[in-house]
Length: 426
Ligand SMILES: C[S@@+](CC[C@H](N)C(=O)[O-])C[C@H]1O[C@@H](n2cnc3c(N)ncnc32)[C@H](O)[C@@H]1O
Ligand code: SF4
Image (cartoon, rainbow, N blue to C red; front, side, top):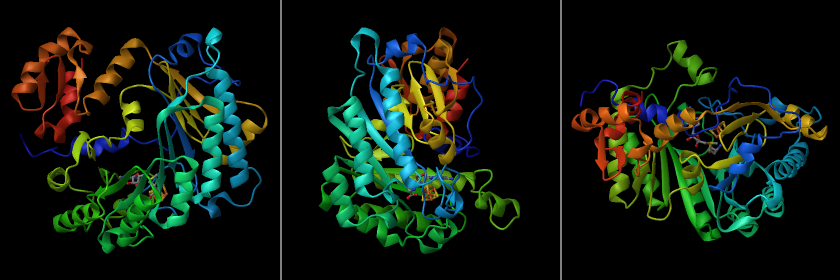
């Protein structure tokens, strides 16, 4: 397999997994948030999840373009306060319940997974996060074995706050560690020390979380291969159940992108990214964490069920400013700014800014794109006849493998998964 473009899929991996900060085009969404009856009829035929977007951060990291705001950016204008946000999300929960109530069946099904992401959800008090979770539980119910996750910045937690989150019903937590090299953390404009993330993992265990994850970033300018190896080894000393490792993406409009444009820092190098991916994969595997998605590794039983629900095309409602949802082949997304979001809900209107109805072919292509990034792959029957005809060549070139009635990326093919999928699709 050639070297050029070796890391292409690793780079693309990140964009497949996060809520983008720019909203897509689409048709306007109705003011009452109503969905087509055909979409609502699908609710309950597969898993249902909730995502809660918490759009607050203490400071903005130079590389991040997520829909998140510092206190200074929000200012003191009414409508952008934490209280307004909490009130607005609870109103959106009530609205979602009404929209998803299914005809004669009445109640929507309970959530199988809930994920508080951001931003920095743990900038809210545990009681505030717990209050939002209670709204979701009261309106929809949670499945008995529901996975309830929160993201956290290591700076924003203590042993006591983590214990309060467990008490409120959170079962899984994911900390942004990124690197253990101080110069890399400085380049990323992270405010915590390397050791803080590892302490946070230990506190999370002591507090009773049943699954603890670390997010790492590789490919930051000035990061050597040894820095990255040391980062993964340090992360493993805390014994996480799950690790996400994403290559640094230079997002337009960020301070980091401006530095690249000015020539102050180089773009991440694709071969360097590929080498770092291989180092991570080998160290994580030795420690008992196996990949289950191209950028995610877990101990048996600790794969993130919420992210798997996205990748398998389940239904989810995204609450909060800029959050995206998918219900029965309709994708919709909320207005971005917390003030606009709270204003819409205070007036009794849906916060949805736009929506898109996926055709059966759109859904099939999305399924192939996402499921081929999973270790389990995609059932061969989902492929068209001409796609199936292309399989033998992609298998011969070492990108894909066929196992009975499923197609998946080969182990070395992971580095080129997205390129292989593009070649496979009609
Ligand atoms: C919402 S943050 C996690 C929680 C918390 N806000 C934090 O940063 O610690 C989600 C993750 O996205 C990843 N991320 C954000 N921007 C990225 C970028 N431009 N390239 C690669 N990873 C990025 C980081 O690994 C970060 O941990
Ligand atoms: S703390 Fe997390 S969400 Fe906030 S700016 Fe940094 S990476 Fe983005």
